Length: 162
Image 1: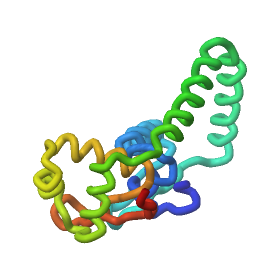
Image 2 (image 1 turned 30 degrees about the vertical axis):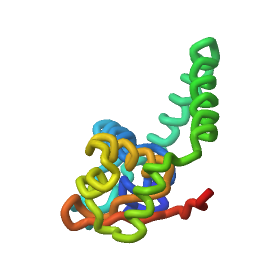
Image 3 (image 1 turned 45 degrees about the horizontal axis):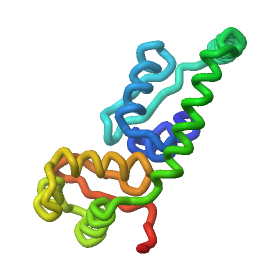
């Protein structure tokens, strides 16, 4: 992904990979510590640089193929089961809650709406709203562009009302 678009944000990566931004940041941090990538510039105007050369790519592919043959046992089956369960769970829980639909309506009316405002209008705690927003973000339905104070919400997928 970084190879194709070095200016990609962690937010966009999380949407494409259907994971929370925290997971993307953790994985990018690991890659930076291993010397595979570096970030040049700040978070808004910077870009990623891949440090992988052919030798390192060969080493990584050999390392993964060896680990795959070593782990083609019960542990690997457990990982496969976890992946399948995760995908099935995602499919089963596709239905949005009424509160999440209301949050989307608020964002559609006002992209600058804040989490405290959402909390007041829905009558639930800030933490509950944050959880709902994290869920909507991990599903790729919304993203936050910009910072906490000067940012705004963007709805990526329209949800049909039922």
